[in-house]
Length: 377
Image 1 (tube, one colour):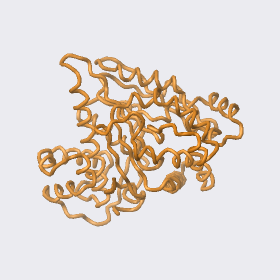
Image 2: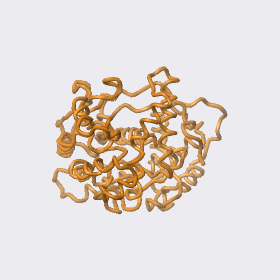
Image 3: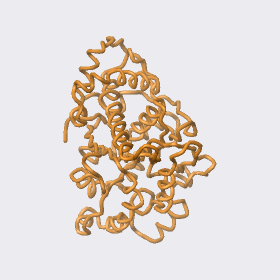
Image 4: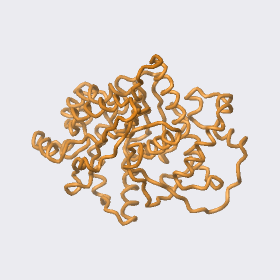
């Protein structure tokens, strides 16, 4: 165990402007109160620490490979410390683990996937950006992971774009129509489950992004305003959408239900009869989302009930920071609308991989309740 929940870093109210270069979304900036000086680790000590991480073997990294690229690991670690406003000489063990056992190994894996993707094209051919999908439950830290990866891509001179499935929710008007069409179905009463997304808009956006291969080409990335209409949400005004420029190297696309596969009706009805409609809606999602994704990162949780605790922690932190946050009861109601889908679809996602994925382009990361990678699968 490398630390508990959100204790590894303390929230700082600073946020990076989502409209700044790269089209990345707002992500949390973290700082930590220095408690006691940590010993300055030698490069040898850090090398041993890196090699002890749970993802090294999974990624096929030998000690020799890590040793050959140790300068890159140190560079990435230094830049992440700057991003999260941490003193690299005073990292706690959980902070060091978060960078060197998680964020940097995942970045190295993404770099390798991009190299494999580029190798499929001949010299002079336009190379479309690689779309990497991040399938992970709410609250497990995927947005912060993507935030860190996006930063590392940009400081190493590559254009990246970040998208969330949340950006494709139906407009407020579309959500109202969905509720009217499914009276009494609490899973489709609010945004979240399959059926509450604008799939043609998803296809249009992802198709346009994959064509952003030349310098000077630009497009805006959609964003969703979850605070609109009393929290029911609406698509943000396009004037607020961040802009990305070509040539794009990578698109980082994250969401809680990416890669979910439709199941037999009797299976979903046994979990919750209301899922039958959601399961039917899910049939259209492969062509709208998953077929664009050529590399996958799946973050596996041990128990879906973790989602409730993580969401509660986030809302408490928001309230303590003076921002509007859900009450404990509202959090319970919110999460309850997602749990049936988790219970139905996660086992298949973990055992078979996402819809359309290939084992050579899939990284499965099991995390504990503290959101740290563990030796598992």
